Amino acid sequence: MALIVTPGALAKRAEFYFQLSAMIRAGLPLIKALETLQRKPPGPGYAAQIERILHHLQQGSSFAESLAHVGKWISPFDQALLEAGERSGRLDQCFKTLASYYEASARRIRDVISKLLYPVGLLHFALLIFPVDRLVAVVKDGDTSGYLSQKLGVFLPAYLIALIAIKLLQSQRFAIWRAFIERILGLVPFVGGARQALALGRLTASLEALINAGVGIIEAWELAGEASGSPRLNGIIKKWRPLIESGAHTPGDLLARSSGFPSTFASIYQSGEISGQIDDALLRLRDYYDEESKRKLDVFTKMLVTCVILGVMLTVGYFIISFYGNLFKGMSDTLNDLQM
Image 1: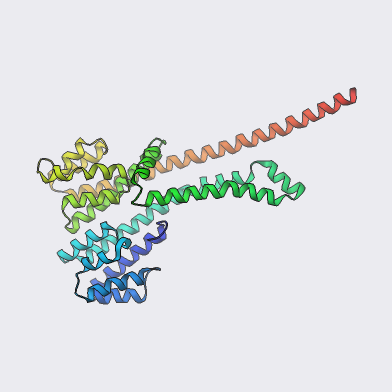
Image 2: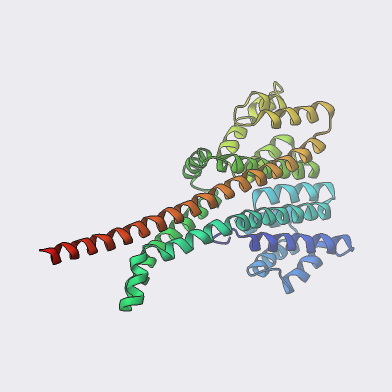
């Protein structure tokens, strides 16, 4: 597994599944398709993992059993979807579904990054300029080492904290930490709403893919909860199994009773459940929450840019006032000395 799950890594996973789907649809057996990909893998590390899968397939194991031997390289979501596809004879369709899923995930992350580039870049620019006396020391005294050491003292800890936070948020471990971060982000205007919308979008996309592949409704909901990336939603869903197995409630009933899901989500899902059109309901929910996350992220980005620009302007104003204040004070002291 990569240290940080990047859009590039998700795009490579999408390419891996897309090529498998295309080759199997063209009539190539699964083993031959994997051997072809092993010779020209979509990314580093793929050849070794494909070799392990091939080894177990050639020993007579099923595809699902072979995937179990690559550990965390294949997520539980992928394993469940592919196992269902193998059982139903729709493995090529499941590969295509996973390719679309990972491509959409990569696109979401790229979209978030592109929206944050400008405010983050502006913040970096401000931190490089201020405090101004460091730049003045570089120009007047050539104190480059002092300037660089001060900037490294600011940027290195910030980058380290950001990398650790991203890794912890992407990891399936440290559930308490991830839940704490989710609660904190929920208090930030628009960020909490955007994060919830992103989680609900991932959940509905995963749920739709799993149900279409033939995964049981309980297992599909649990795997979709894990794929959502939200510890809160995942925790709520994990409590549903005994209630659904008893036959006393359906997922739609439990959604309506849960405070963790928006009423809009519960209403649309329940309508699809009652009418027997869950697939259509999930597609509508996925599109709705994708748009909602983009809208809220746009608002947050504009607010962040405004705050950074305002902060820079106030800081510049402070230094200008301080400069002229010191200048006039120095002139006044000089005049007083001359008069004495």
